[in-house]
Image 1 (cartoon, rainbow, N blue to C red):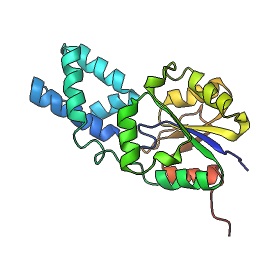
Image 2 (tube, rainbow, N blue to C red; image 1 turned 135 degrees about the vertical axis):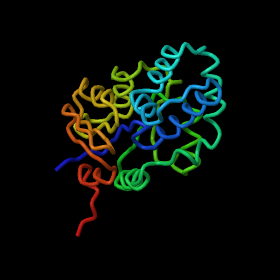
Image 3 (cartoon, one colour; image 1 turned 90 degrees about the vertical axis):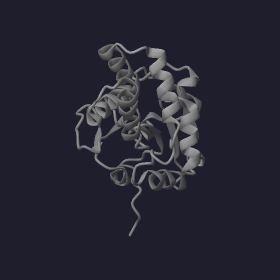
Image 4 (cartoon, rainbow, N blue to C red; image 1 turned 60 degrees about the vertical axis):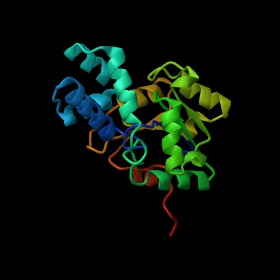
Length: 215
């Protein structure tokens, strides 16, 4: 029986299904502005590694001006930002259940705070999080565990009661570095052996977090 009361969530690709829209925006920019036709599935895979990785690869491979590309992306990405990037099925339900049971939800992400809070506000999910850490907070990027350790110390969280949930290996590696449990989320069914749990949909967390309704 697990007794996790504190959940450290990643954001992109974990709580919110953002990668398809990111890939769509990037491929459209490349087609319209640079007459370069990219495979959207390939671009999405690059985004799943990280948006920085995707940007760096495109800028390097096609010798594109970095500032120009970033400016084009920033303007295009904000169009239909919220409606094109919904939470994954079950996300709000799980977050609500955790809160109702006296638990606390946290977010640690490399995403900027402006677009993150736009999405949380649009889907009425801001109130479900005790603390949100974004790139503006100045912590080293995952898998450096400084942001996780801050939350554990700030909220006096027993390590045996916290679990990290994320869709990338760095989320699991961050948890592993400080000996807390981790859950790897892959809608494609990928398995990451370092993770303590592997799931394909967020509803599977009900069993891991002991959130099932008692009969």
